[in-house]
Image: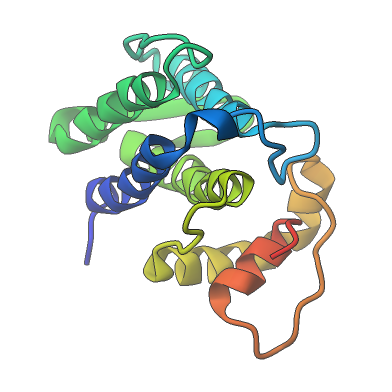
Length: 184
């Protein structure tokens, strides 16, 4: 079985590839997240992830360049630091305590709260910029089965839009994207 470090490497690697492939003229394209442009997808991840780690584990990630100046550099500074945390068994097993998210081992918290966000936002960025939208199917299937029981809670959080209807025989990625309120 893949560790969270392995899984993060795959999911974050795909997001990194997508960020690197965005044409310069596409950074201001509208994103599937209402009111966001492509650059805001990256901004969201590089702002909330460090703040969440700081609040829950007193971990300070190194700052990269500003998203507006260098989206790829900004993202890789955060992502590489997270990968370093996960690759260090002593750090990965540290405690993460957050008043809203609860108490978890650090790597488990990253697996629960970051992996899915990076996965979905990879699709958002690809959709906004006309790039390849295919996601890791193992992660997609796992997230889909793991997220469905929490439908009501997720909708009430305000982080997900209304579920979009898709055919019963749609593939897992289509179902997941629709579940989180995006138009596949």
